[in-house]
Length: 466
Image (cartoon, rainbow, N blue to C red; front, side):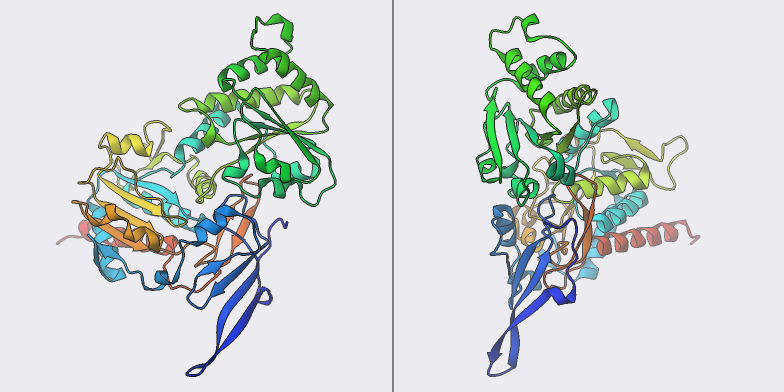
């Protein structure tokens, strides 16, 4: 598995079929070392086969998530057009309607934000032009990790370090292969290291048995994560198992686990914030990092956080770099009233579901360029909606029957229809994406840039004397 490999022209081959009318035509093109954009592992060793009708297959991979995602990209993408209130329109007409919605909104919300780095940069510039709030499709899981980092700091590790050094993995309250099918392959295949995986507060992940030179066990599968981490924190700080009145034997099991950690060369804790019980996942993550800090006084350990699909990590990294704040931030207009902060970050107040349920957003720009994620069900039917989504999302029934102005603009999927860049799951590597096929769809960056320019033109015209 490569760290990051870019397909070049030499990596694309064509199989030809003869047509009596048109002569030889390419029936299938194959891209070697193609990077899959649908999972934050960003596996870059895929062999992508593109048929003449622009459907894509990756028969050599065993990734069910990739296979499922590719079924939503087919020949109809070539003929998908923008729509306003369910009626097909030209791209210019759709853009004009979207610009009008944003120009009239006083408190727009940019939700979903499923795009790549270029798309995130353009969305941020657009948000600055209309005073929008930015939140992610996976905002709850992302905010839990961010809050823990802000409050207590963290010991992070990377896929490469886990692969090369970790002889002990502690998987806490999740089964990584459910959302990251090639996780164990990425950390273990082709290496000679003997590894042990301990699953805590969950059953053993069946896929773990497929990893090379790895043995897996589960402990405390039915125990409460909150109870386990409370006892574990105390034991990590020096308390003995005998000092607890613990009829369930949790303290004894954790003391034994700590002894095994002390023997390990390097321990990697694997967590998946989206799988932790809400609404206090941040406290669990904070407790885990506190345990890892205690371990690092005498040994070596780090945390690998899984999640961030649909460009979530990339958008968060980009917005943080541009503004100094993570997602769930409101960007004020340049002509904001005196005393108004240019930026306002609040992980609770600016949560998409809360804003929509309370009617605090008067327009929603929903971006879903990787998969057919629909706008939240809490969106009021009278709130204007702009969707920048995959072509398959355009046929969603909810977009056809809304009372308020509804604009759908089909956009390219990075890595499928356009080039791009994404951060890998450990945020240590930016991986280039290269289009697997040639479908003429605009990128999120193109649409957002056009809308920002249109808003700037409207604002300039409004300031000009009659």
